[in-house]
Length: 248
Image 1 (cartoon, one colour):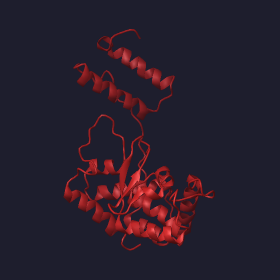
Image 2: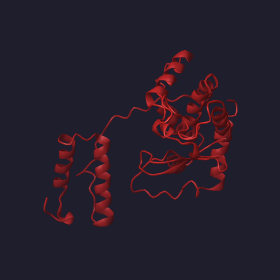
Image 3: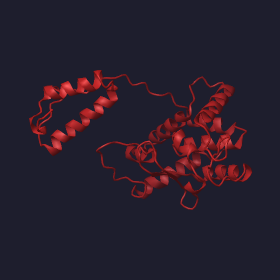
Image 4: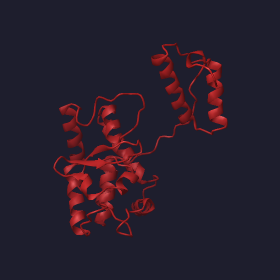
């Protein structure tokens, strides 16, 4: 389209979005992300009005994942006899990690002094620090000393020079859920949902939760970085996670 951005009409924007939907096969969420970016560009770059009736967001069905209660998560962890498997779940839950982030942890990523975990190349394509509770550190330390003291990958797979496979973690979680008779579809990612949900239930600031999860929220500028959040909130998060895992 050989036109200046200022001269593009709403009808042409709708045509573009239909192209993204029908030809590019983008999902409604992805198209809505495009709409948000176009709206931002119109309002704050071109200083033009934006008509939500001319370019409405696409509707989609949201299915909220069913999360386990804090007591159910603690019972899930406490009943695991394999220390390595227990370490998986403790980190997935207490640090809110993605399974890909867990798999690719290296020995040097665990900052024991400052109680944090360095996460590199996350899904949002940026590095971050995840929180590390004292009790999670204890479980992790017990695992490290009793399971070969790995120096490269924190959780090596069948081949020591490669990290544990995602399907291995998923399989053992489903097996243990079946053993406990849990009907909820328990996956590695469910523990990340539990982490966020339990923090939200304790009225933790959503921006803090987003930062801890490493969620990419586009144009929004987050001032509540891990090093900039209020002292009270930081203390609360640490205490919540420590107390929540004290019976493991």
